[in-house]
Length: 115
Image (cartoon, rainbow, N blue to C red; front, side, top):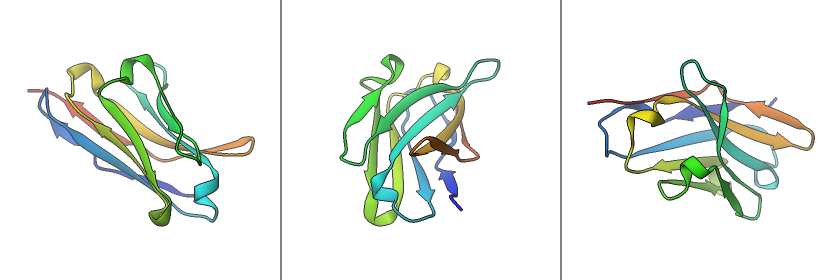
């Protein structure tokens, strides 16, 4: 059974930084595409970034320049570094793992950007 557990969210002032973590259970972590999505209140869930098993990354236009996705296969963990946080980054951030044609989601970690 695959479990994805996010952590690292919180309340941060505009301009601050956060590093989100997602710890994955199950075997073969290094083989799978991992991603981060977010969902703001009243909006649809949207892609933030993905990273392949080989380390190739894709970012949403809104995430380019301030977000960095990375992975540590030895720790079965994927990270999302977010710098220069803005109020519009406020959302529930979800970790995602693609295993073949099936995807798995974590429960999310809340990021709130407010002064």
